[in-house]
Image (cartoon, rainbow, N blue to C red; front, side):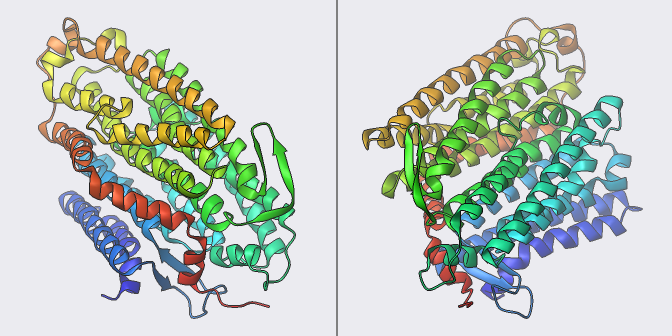
Length: 531
């Protein structure tokens, strides 16, 4: 296969799996087998694409007969590959868990086609080279999720699904209007061409202020998709309503699509754009677009960390704790991006690196914890903390896996979460030493969030796993070994990635460098000269 063909291979694999699992509904075992084969093949092609990009550099695939900026192009750089790897690993784990945990009828009717179509949308969003198709792939990803959130069809599931659907449809409408405005202002939809036109003196003159305003609206939409404050209100209900593997995929992967879009838009596309006059805000000043995005991202990140942490401490059920925790943990991903937006050089690269490493940790740990929550509820019949107890003795595999996942979120060495937290703190400290006074406030928020993380995870552990076994634990019910094995595998991944962190670090650093290399992205896509 040529590098161009390898770029499109993950998307084609997921699409073929979606089609095959649709036409084999009458043969449940065949359908489930094809679905698992599709997940393994997707992981294999992502690994092949990653190897190709790391060896030869950014690869592109021209979808249409016209060259960019007019034609549709897929772009696989180190950033896209890093995010695809997260999707592939979490996607396969949740797919295996789905086969083992969901009823046969539920799987046969719609689950597997919808899951793979959602993976098609995720892949397209990571690979697309133009902003309109980013909208298209967002919708391809979201439409199956609307159905999967309401999968159980109870009153609470339907209510959560309607809220989730309506909010995302409104966000999508706003996104489409913003993209139309950007096209009217810049004359192009190709992201590399937008970056070139905003920075190249030889390109047609563009008024940067409307571009900044429209980009800020897009930023808000991406934050809605990621469930960041003040757009977090759909998260708890949707995560409780969806089946555990769907919730794990939503938290571990689809949220990262919103984060990826922020990195790609703010740093790759608009990172070199400037305004005619500087922006003056408390703690931030400058004439670049990033000088504006920095304080906005900081307020959203700080709100997410604090609100998510306080909300998680006060929840009475495991799913509720994990749902609010997801809000807070995504704040930890956005916080170093806020600091990076107002920094330069090494600190900016470090901030993006911190966000990517923490995104990886969050994907592994939070996916494992949501799957464990489902396994606990299946074993005990409840997720209420006051009805649980003694799980450490009654279900040691689940307890051990939960313990590792929790330590990953807390950031205990040598787990990968330690390096994520370390880079977040290091970004704030180095920015503060360099003279960014607001970076010390970011450090204070990160410390407060770390303390809240310890508080709510310790509470869950003490109530659910320590103490005497309740009647639901002492009964004869046993956890299905396959479900426990998936959770244990993700927990082992948290340990392995942390212990063998050097190759992960090098890959994440290459991804951060690619995110900031606007010129390299433009050269790889080669949008040409448009007069």
